[in-house]
Length: 533
Ligand SMILES: Cc1cc2nc3c(=O)[nH]c(=O)nc-3n(C[C@H](O)[C@H](O)[C@H](O)COP(=O)(O)OP(=O)(O)OC[C@H]3O[C@@H](n4cnc5c(N)ncnc54)[C@H](O)[C@@H]3O)c2cc1C
Image (cartoon, rainbow, N blue to C red; front, top):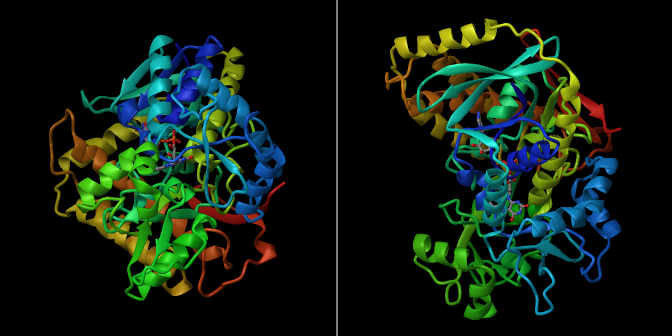
């Protein structure tokens, strides 16, 4: 019998799995992708911490920067915990051999990121996420943790508001199975990927866990807050990390003039760039003055990406960039111990709303969050394991099998891939960096139209095994659910705050110093704002 099921094998899922295993529990990691393909491997710039060797910084400064960036929506107790434990988290990663870049004295190097007062971001050249992810995976293999890869979570088995297991689709065999466990940890990543064609996110980042937790009755929060990164390669959505600006890079307009403090918070920088784009002007990242040696030392991967995808050289050329949907601050609402509103269900990483980021995330805070709260989730999920296994019904399993069978049997007369693309454009244009009621309402009715149009269609590929067509369809359903939630929250938050900017309500309004909350109850979406206590 399995004690703890972890959904997702990114940094959050693997940290959770290691920590539950350390508590002596029987752990199963279920993941849509192979662990080494999880989006965490894309993180370039770094992970924040106040280390004992950090100069001119303190936990108090870190707390202040993170809380300020949250625009009063961060939960103080959670941010305090987060900042105070940053050093221990890095020391733990160091102890399992994450290859951090170091200075001449052997201390872990740190660079400056936007919205911060100090050099606080530890890094591994520009491969930070990849090094962390691969090291965590090595540790999991060493600990003999069981992995079930290429398996997609379809639903949670929740009875009397208590999770008792999961239902998954095994891509390789086509089987749909119900697996019972005492606790489930959701670590399925964020939802910025619903902006298809306008996002730095991986294909797998479709908000599945949030959509599934929502439909199972969990409290979901702050879905309107989607972060747009200022510097993706123009029309390519390939990220050039904030570290490029942290290392001294400039943002310049067509006349090569700087027009904004490059290290302001991401939302402000992204809006300044997008305003130029809306005027039909280009914006460039200028790294020429840094020189080849520094570029090779601090951003070799990004230099190669620029060469390959733009046919340009960072040391000689201006690099055209534009903002791209990058990170989601909202998600499954969690307590400090990562518990969700459903008993025995935990969430960590980007799929959670852990109270740390509020309306805007600081660069480098996500990698810290996934490892720190991943470890907490593994430990806390292990605590409840003393309970006995209970009988579990197979009603949901039967219903899902029937739904999938229908998808095989029904005709496919709509190209749902084009809907996925249209959804991405709709979200970027109507629910992007600048929002207003009319466009949000248009987006909402269009999303409902998409939902209706895919309801009665089947899938084209009728093969039972390795059916990507089926998983793509199921992902689109989740993307539409999540998009509807983003738009509804954005419509209801009639103010501007952090990453959520309403041209029809330009000011921050203190009556909205609250979390937006959504709960799906008796087939109806219940939306309200809740005090942050
Ligand atoms: C290009 C890029 C650069 C970034 N750089 C930085 C940085 O420098 N510093 C920083 O702090 N943050 C950075 N971020 C953000 C950070 O990388 C992510 O927030 C973080 O890695 C998310 O980790 P996670 O473990 O929560 O999710 P992920 O790494 O996204 O992993 C999610 C896992 O869940 C699985 N999954 C999803 N749905 C299902 C399902 N239905 N069934 C089964 N499995 C499922 C996926 O296969 C995957 O294994 C960056 C993000 C991007 C896109």
